[in-house]
Structures are given as C-alpha cells and as structure tokens.
Length: 597
Ligand code: GTP
Image 1 (cartoon, rainbow, N blue to C red):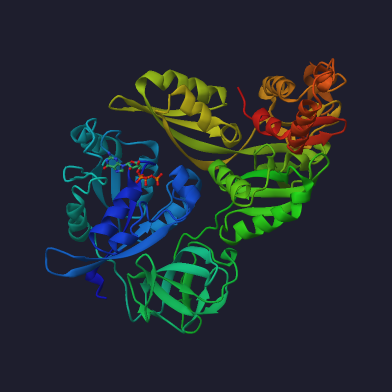
Image 2: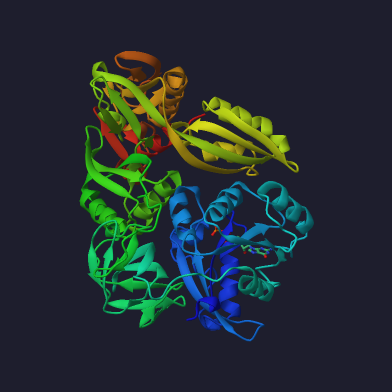
C-alpha cells in the first residue's frame, strides 16, 4: 500500500465517554464487519472488560474507507487501554500511530483521563482531532466543552467534530477528518526492517500473536526475525492484518499494522515496545524509549480451601500466559498456608485478576493487604526491594526506608473541592497545584502510593458523589518514617494483615483495624484479644467477648431437622473461614479489615 493512502490512529478518551461505541460505528459504517456479525463494543473482547466497561488489552482493526477524494484509504485503529494502571502500554501503542481522535463527552467535558491520555498523545507528536460525543443528550453543551478543550488542553477545538456515536450522527465526518486532518505515516521500504512490538496475546490455536507496526523495510511470511531487547529469534509462520478477524497477507510494509506468529511460547517472551528486525541484515539502532513495564502493587493470593492450591496454580499459570505484566511466585504463610505473592501494575489490575480467578476458575481467595514496593536501605549501603511486609529485614540492619510517591491529578466540581483537599491531606498528600477550568477545579497532589492503594478511589468517589476523576503517575522514591504494623488475634500474629504504615498514622490505622476485626470475627467460646503492634509494642487493642451459649441451644426441644439445617449452614460458612490458632476468621474479614475509615 502506498504510504499516503494509510492513516494510523488511536482514540483517546476518559472512561465512558464513548470510545468503544465510536470504534464500533467506524467499523460498521465502512462495512468492515458484516452487519449480522456486529456485536456492540466489538473491540472489548473479554467479558470482564465489557462488564466493567474497561478496555485492558489494546485491540486493533484495519478499515478500508473510500474517501470523498475518490481514493480508498487504509485506516488502522489501535484501541488503547483506558486506565491509569496501563499508562505504559498506552504510551507505547501511541508511538505506533500518527494521530488521535480526542473523544470528549459533550455533556461531561474534560476529565482527568482525558488530560492524561491526550498529553501522552501530544508527547507522541500526534496530530489531534477533537470529537464531541453524545450531542444527542439534552445536557450536551458542545460550545462550552469546545472552549474547555482549548482552555485546559490548549489545542484548537474550533473544528471539533460533533457526533453521536450512539445514533451514528457525524460518523462520516469523523472518517473524512481522519483522512484529511491526520498525517500519513513515513517510512523507507528499502531500509532494513524496523518494526515496533505494540502488543501480544495468547491464542489457544496459534500460540503467541504479536501485533506490530512496521516503521521501515518489509516483513514477509517465512522471514527469520529477531527481537532486539530479548535477542530471541523466530520464523514468521503467519502474517495477517486484523479486520478485526485475521486475514493473511504476504507482507507488511512501512506504515502498516498487523500481526505475526512464530512458535513463541509465552507472552512473557514478548516485550511491548521492543524493536523487531531481520535476523540477518537487520537494523542496528532499536527504536528509542523502550522500558519494561514493572509491577508496583503486590499482594498475596491464598485459596480459602487449601485443597484448591493446585487449582489456583493452574489458573494463575494460565492467566499469566496472556498477561506479561502480572508476576507471581509461590509464598507460604503461617496462617494462610500455601499461596502466591503476585505483582500488578496497579490496584485495578489486581482487582481484574482476582475477579477472573474467582469467577472463571471458581476459586475462593483470600487477598492480603496490597503493598507497594519499598526500598529498604541497609546499614551496609545495599538496597533491598521489599514486596512483602513479612520479609522486612531485622531493623537493626536497616538504615532507612523509602516509599514510592505519585503525582495525582484530580478534576472535581467546585462544591466538592474542600472534601477532596481534606482527603488528600489525610493521606499525607502535598498540594502541588490548584487551578480552575470553568466550574471545575484541577488539583495536583504529591501523594505516597501506599496511601492510594487501599481505598483512595472508593473514598474519592464517595466524597464527590462520583463527580471527581482521577489519574496518577509514579514520580519516584522518598524516605519517610515507615514501620511495619502487625495484627495479633488471640496473641497470634496474622501475617496476612501485616502492613507498612507511616509512624504517625499507625495508631489510627491500628485502632480502626482492631475495631473492624472485632465486628468481623464471630464470637468464640473464649475471650479473644485483638491487637495492633509495632515491633513488640502494642499500639491498639480490642477484646471480643466470649459467646455465652451454644448457637444450637435455642433449638433444644425443637425439631431435629431445623437443628441439622443450622449445623449445615455453619459448615458451609466454615469453608469461608480460616483457622488461626484457636480462632476462626471469616474470609470477608480480610477484605473488609483492609478498607479504612
Ligand atoms: P471504556 O471502554 O470504559 O473506556 O468506555 P468507552 O469510552 O469505550 O465508552 P463506551 O463506548 O463504552 O460508552 C459508554 C456509555 O456511553 C455506553 O453506555 C454508551 O452506550 C454510551 N454512549 C456512547 N456514545 C453515546 C452517544 O453518542 N450518545 C449517548 N446518549 N450515549 C452514548
């Protein structure tokens, strides 16, 4: 294909502003998929994505569009992930295309992820076409939002396309704008092959499928290729474009986007952002800016029923096949038995994986307190990464501990600003910026990531009635007074509830935790002390009184079946319990105890 007949683009938007709906319309209008095969939100493959309305893996489609100038253009859409946890994947996939449609819900206006994503697009030198969506809604204010885009983002929005992705209004104008306003890709067909690895996924029939964007040169079926970061070499078994079903192609040239397979066993062996070239006579310089995506939030996942351990191992192995950014290793806990220490890109990533394990594989899990990665600087000058509070070395050897900090951007309507500032302040935040965009405030805070991983999103949503939007990026590590807090139930430490906290916040956290646990742990035949401690020092304490009577006592004299039923119910409940010394703690306690406030 001639370069000037290609347009490569992505769609950037805040969650729910209509990115998937617009993608569906573009595909539909160009007849890329037969009408009867058209499913809503075609590009969000996984059920869970659909349910949560979040796009996790980048998906791609090639559209053929006969433009008004009489030529047929190839439009390649890369569907980028929409959530902060996947910021790195977004930034890489944007480097594979030349332009973006900036979709803004005309009834909502610019939100935090609109900003984060559009800045990523600007960083990637994109030409940007603003699109105002949902103009069918009575609450739509396209003029106000156009102004807001200019004020807040600083790009020209005078020619923003007004559409309703839902009804199809304005979609032909979007297609024309892609052709006339976005630049064609550049590249040299005669140069050595240089392609970017944009994404990869596991297909049960084909093995690992690799999505690439060719920059220079040509890749053909049967070629021997090399991945420059990993050094691995493979033969190209299959070469195809995505329409969105795979359609074989003999070659892909500069500016083109497609997939190849080549007996690659694991997604882990493919690094997003890597440069692909020919094994012989390849290019010498890789594409700039490669960095591996690293997990930042860790937690332990343990089966409630220890008989499920092998099942959990199988399920985790399978999930990891398709998700290279998820890491895991076996862990054993005194209280919880065998399980896995898992690393995630962020909290949402954690939730998605945990949900899938529970739902698709039907395993009840106990999730331990999520923890960020601390840098523990030892007295001998060495540094250890701490992924699990349980592994904190003997403090006499520790010089100081550093924690990751983030830059958080929050957009919020004026009337909730006070509550947001208070929340950030309570979480040890340092205000960096406060500006206004119309009736909305934009606050930027420097916050410890550790204070965000527990329930920051939930709190933010509740104090602002859902009107705030939030985005963050990790900025670096800083020393602080961090300690390990342990929880003791009936004098036994429950390692799954150990956490790193700031010294000044330890008492408050400890007290809240003990109070929560007191409500969540059922009474036993004996009195149970519940304590929070730092080192050997108890900083908070509650006592759970003993149970007075046997639960079945009230059934005495009553009928036997009722008593049996009650016992049976208790037995079922027990499966969701965990034995700690003499005490049984319900699974729910672990989850609830970690939600603060
Ligand atoms: P994520 O995949 O979560 O990033 O969301 P998205 O940006 O892809 O949004 P999606 O396309 O899923 O749309 C979100 C909601 O808005 C859905 O309920 C759509 O039906 C609705 N929606 C999308 N476009 C329009 C529109 O033009 N008008 C109206 N009224 N609703 C729309």
